[in-house]
Amino acid sequence: MNTSTKKWLFLKYSSAILIPLMLWFIISLVSIYDSEYIEVVKFFSEQPSKVLFSLFLIFVFFYSTLAISEIFEDYIHSEKIKNVANKTLNIFAILMPLVTIISIFNLKL
Image (tube, rainbow, N blue to C red; front, side, top):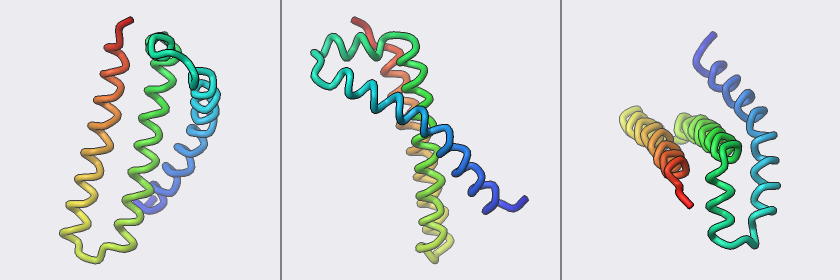
């Protein structure tokens, strides 16, 4: 199986996983939208919310990284610039969810 097919399959699988996570996130966001700060922190401090939101972040960044790298492949013609852009994107896609997840797991009431 070539690289393009693998990327396409990963995009499809991650989008299928994102559907229930997105529904959970939208419902949760609506439920805490008008809440006070303490209630929002309490929501993200509870175990199911921590895990589900962490999974949501991981899959969102994974999906977006794959989609943006395909855009780089299509529209950037210089291999050097394309490689730098992809590596920068990959570093960003690892660091941002990692920092956010660590912050969420360190939340205290």
